[in-house]
Image (tube, rainbow, N blue to C red; front, side, top):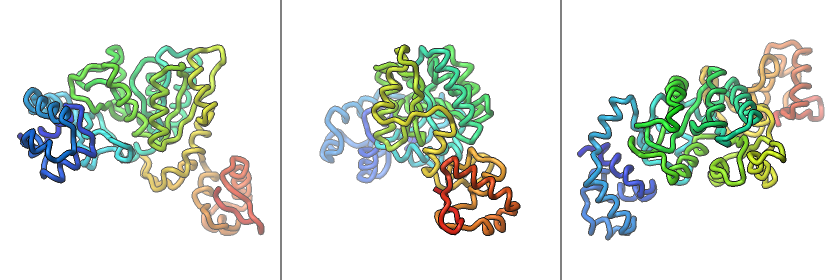
Length: 366
């Protein structure tokens, strides 16, 4: 047995946390050694319970990891362990990230600039329209849109991102040996050409209800923030919002009609502290300072995501501004713009709340 086969087996038992796995690895040296250890040896370490040990040993006896890996390779599915350089950086920073990802398509460093968008499967025309609009606007600015491939808001978010020729990632609540819902097979294929479809589950794992809370933590974990568009009082989207809050992500909600049951959850999120948003600009403004040094798909280095929504003179002036006050003459000299253009850009940036005018007609970024 190879170490990859051993890791695939340990992941398949669905009972070993990353923390416990790393402790076992430190004690025993390799994934293969973990599976070869006796029940007595594993128990003596006190790192996992007796029931978890039974599940590890049972999975080791019954699960054919070699066959699983061969099937993944034939299906164009990449296996990405936690310690791989290809593992998404945002996801590494959550409590108990997946040991292993099954991935079809590709994830690039620029996908760190990601926003999750989730909501009702039985959404209204209002919800579907605004989810697609927001996703298109955000993707046009360089955001990767993360969602769950479900009917309704999820599908609208993925389609909105691709409409802008942007990046999108779908996280399944089942294994990649199938597409759920089945009617989204064509959509899933299209997503792999603009990003990735992924899961932490073995290829044949069914779309069981117990799998979706874990899938939702991955959706929020891949992202800088989560936007909820239409969610009933008891909705899986609210679970995603809860995960986001626990992971230190921003939570946004699109307000809806008081008469629409599908908006009761989103309106409650706003009441309880989620940020009310109506446009991509509002989301970008909130997330702006969170992603210093991220490289965008076009190769630019971005030190403040708020600059994504700025073009022309505004973008040039904003990029030059920082925490230290500078004069208009300094901005003119650095950017090459004429004084009139700099003054106009500064006025617009000030109105947008992105700059502050100080004594002596000097400016800083807010």
